[in-house]
Length: 523
Image 1 (cartoon, rainbow, N blue to C red):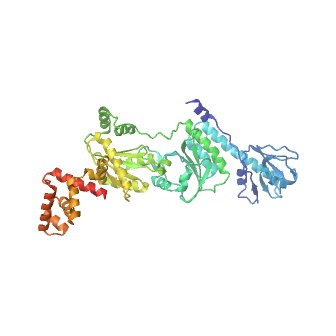
Image 2: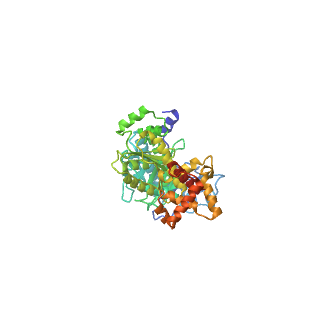
Image 3: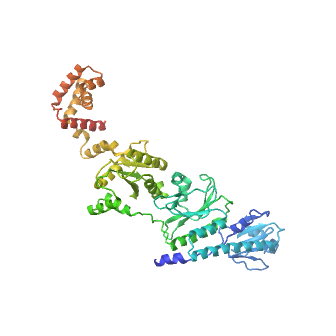
């Protein structure tokens, strides 16, 4: 452990109350208090009774009767005051935070109650620090927090794995068990809801304690993001408003507790990035074509896979909203749990899925159905390669999946899944026309046929297309064109004369059909 980290993990902060927490203490009482607070949230170590000519210190809150206070404050006087009766006018214009009680309030019981509040919070802080020093774990820390906040508290890491959730009450989200790691996690359906929730997206950038509204879950959540000393997001602490109302002063307490949790995470070396599985490095090398034959053989033997098994490679594109909430790990685990014989991992901001169809207990159509559910629920887009039976060809099929994904998304299709076969011809057309335009690649004799039609008002160009489409079947061609067979034969003879091309040769027919395809793309 380096020196900077050692200092970070051993420095335990001090918990100091603020005036809002004292005001909260009396919020449900019969007292009709008024709370006037300065913009600077002062931190307090204790309470004192004000006596005449007492010099006010910023770290204490003073309890005083209004008539005992000096009428005029010294220049730039700041402080915290619990005032029984109406304070002098100058205090309202000062940098004082004040809680004003009715004039009939008894000072001594008031002092004792505020003193007990400080003692209660001091005990809580000491219990947290003791649990931290003894390395009792996150569960103990969150148990102490749940008792303090009188609501269930849980914490999750950046990938939505539950770090601790010791107190469950009715109404809370029910965690799911991740089949790959055995860890509890937030349900994938809920994570999908987070992806399209603008309010939740905004919470990913906040610092300090904040409240997430009840719009989505039906109850409010007081939360605090965990940022380490390098500015990296390490997860979140959440307090569910299910047992008692959230109070404004709890923001201060949660900010303190978040510091304790961060220290505990670092002390226990609970690195949230520990979900990398061994095969990811190997499959990444396969895709990048850096894995040699011996390495491939060893891995296939260990996996129980064969070179000649049937495979399919799939790429699932992640949107910015997916990467912001770090959903990829959970999605990968869910895919592997749903589809036997599959591996899924993050590579260059996409999820790559490799399925051994020979090793899977599901048919290819069943695999498609499983993935369709995942893609629809997660609002993903996926590209599929063709199926192949040579493991070493995986890099090329990874490229196929990417081509299918790119072309499919450009097609404005409403489908979620795109097959390479759907776009192979369009891809071929784009590849072969990179240097020469379509008209320069097409059969020049076919272009002459177009010119002949234009000059003579004939339909030989479309007649030949139909004839080739029907694999030179005269009956089907005549029927499709709504012409007599004798008319068709007349046109075909004229075409053969004009083209001077032997259509009994398969390569010539292929060239003509490819020419039609290329020329159609120019119109």
